[in-house]
Image (cartoon, rainbow, N blue to C red; front, side, top):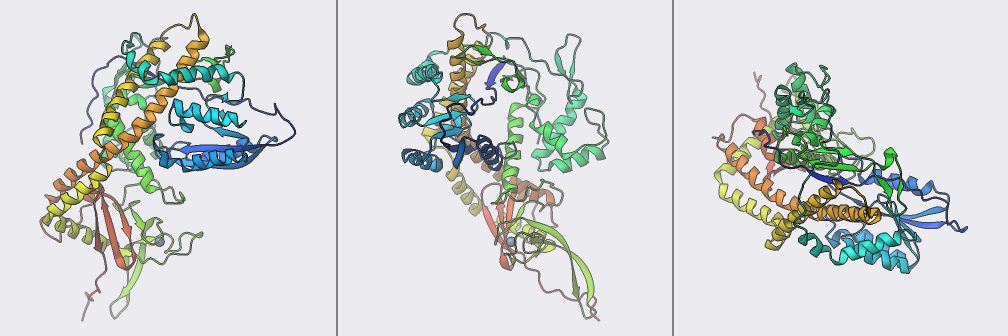
Length: 561
Ligand SMILES: [Zn+2]
């Protein structure tokens, strides 16, 4: 896999990420009765690596509500899902609304407008309906209380915007990126930043020697290596970190992989008016919004490769998660089966063990390597309910190679199965059109935000700020829908790409008893499920599954007299 040097530097695009604001909601309006609080949380399935995972959000909001002596937590309602557009993911939301109608909740606390509603119109409808019941919603990120009189203006603007939503976006094609972000380019300190340097004029330029290391890290991840293995490899080759240290950690590699600066973008911060209704300016670090600037400086990694890496990190993260989110293993990639095998009986990870067997008339103890469910091997004190047997590593390897040979001999079946898997994720024609349309809308809105950010806020600051905020929500909402559809599209492409990789790998298989090739396994297998009686299901990255039997045949005594 070739990590291409990213191309030229088109005009910058600014995407603004609204500031995280701390609420000032407290004891005011206390009428002697504790307010019954409902919390609504939506968890993105892709962000488990960030501090937004379900558990963290729940405990955060729990504490948040409990901190206020006048509040009483009724329930935390949580829906899971990437896209805000699908109603089927909003079971908990609907249940919460029902409880509101039964007057079991006085107040709803939620993270942001985009998490709460599917679009502006949807949002307004719920706000109004709940308001008519005397129920307020507090949007934490926007610091907006729907029962607060100050929110009226905002809601008015939001509503007029909602009405001409589609029209106003499409009519504004003229908004182009005319200037860079208000203060010019964002400054990135390059001294300790691997891959970049500054020229005499203070422009950021690529340090080609260091850039090689960055590209190596990205490439190796896409080749299937885990971050600890990549770190070890760098140390083995005597490569120094940005701070000229010999030690590379899994974490430092991970940070390189997650850094948007390598694709030329930059997340910059700027102080801004916080309360757009009272014109109050708050210069507080808590209230700094983030400006996301695209194409700020030359990229080391192409946007495409960067996205691939993010997807791969997400994929691995998902894969390593067991149902109860109990074991967060690091993706080591060291032993080929590491972190790829799960127990078919209890669903928990299957790990590598060194065991001893005795055979032959002399009962000579011999060590061997096996893969065994964590629970069944009694390495998990919390669970005792699994009796799944272990499989010999050697047998598993043999079975895998034999499977490849069988697949090679029946490629029609393989291709047929892949087609079926692709049908499940492929977008309909309508969805494809929607995805294109969303892309265009997001670009336009991004341009508009960039344009506005570069304009001075002279005349009507209230409207300016409100418009800006509206655009930002709109951008977020569109982005969510886009990401949802795009994930399916990417999944289809992933399957197709991995079918090619598998077929290519099969060319090297000539017989049923080839030597085990860990590279092929890493390249083609998503995960394996170990069932009882040594049955192992291999799930391929191209979307198909095959079951093999990895039973150890009775050993002939090699030292027979
Ligand atoms: Zn098990």
